[in-house]
Length: 233
Image (cartoon, rainbow, N blue to C red):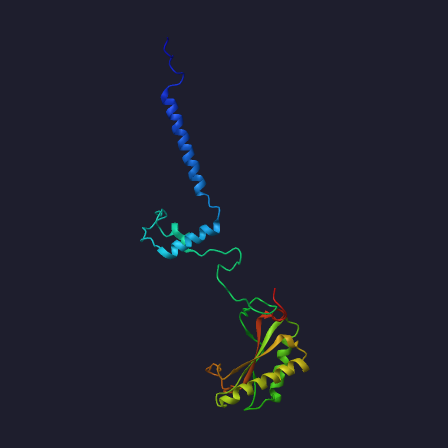
């Protein structure tokens, strides 16, 4: 009998093909393991491990833009907080505010400007003297037709007892408020009364001889009155 002829393909070719098939199978297995299907479960596992092991910090790095792989920049994803897509509050339980207007509103009033001259009262009087009425008319002329918010800030002397300062200042501010609204026809939604008492004394000037601290200052604010009316969107 004749011997079989030499094979058509060398043996090393078959061995190389088997090796490449094994490598391809190995890489496919790695790719399949790297895909995270259950994202929430995987995140919970990572957080449990981080809570148990703790967050590690990198040593000090040399200056420059080339950061090592164990630097803090490489681990920022572990140190930052994550967003809970179901609640949109960063995973924290928060009690919501009640009412129709849910947004907390803090308006920046900006710089306040004194309108006209301060209006002075005598002693503990709650009514203006005739010499001060003209000042109120000048102030009303300057306020008329403007949309800005206005504060009527009432001051009093330190000689007045503490228990009477607040009521006296408010009564004086209310007198100016009623005069501006009822007599001089200023829009009431633009006005507000502020009681300062004796906490803001007049700055003593070199040639100022007026030592009367019982005064009212009408201040125009850097904000519009319509910003304080109704719900904010």
